[in-house]
Length: 162
Image 1 (tube, one colour):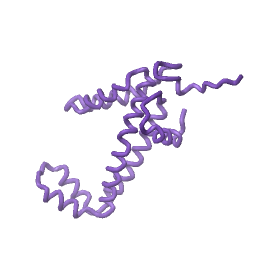
Image 2 (cartoon, rainbow, N blue to C red):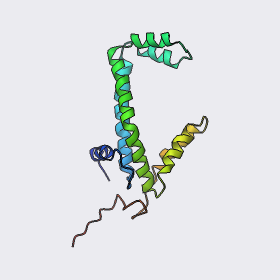
Image 3 (cartoon, one colour):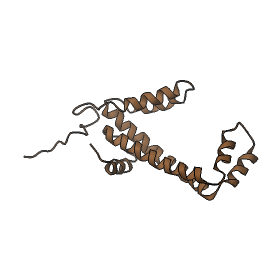
Image 4 (cartoon, helix red, strand yellow):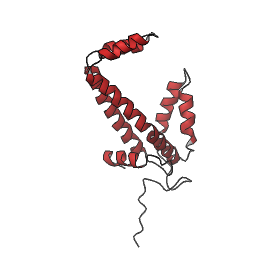
């Protein structure tokens, strides 16, 4: 099993790599890492001046660009910085998230194209929440024991002593 730091390091070193397999701990440590980052940024945002007003305007069904601009202008510097860093973090982690999910499906001896299927199915109005939940539950399942068509078992330390 990977530790937290090693899982995050592998996550970023395999930024463009859909090949191979990723064990459950690799996926869940990265999931925890992202929850921590988003939580810290959300706390910074909510502590900013004008944050609740900004959220009220964004949630309301207004089409007025002037209201949105006024709410953004009333938002404090830390709130604007938090929004900026949330967007940067989300965009920079979009591709490695997909690659990690592909490798996780490979560990389950499934095609990586299921990531695309789950993403599109998740956009459907009523069933989207259930699709996301099903995806998370599926990633709780242990991978196939031993090698499969996508590579060797990531949990086995195959060492050749002699």
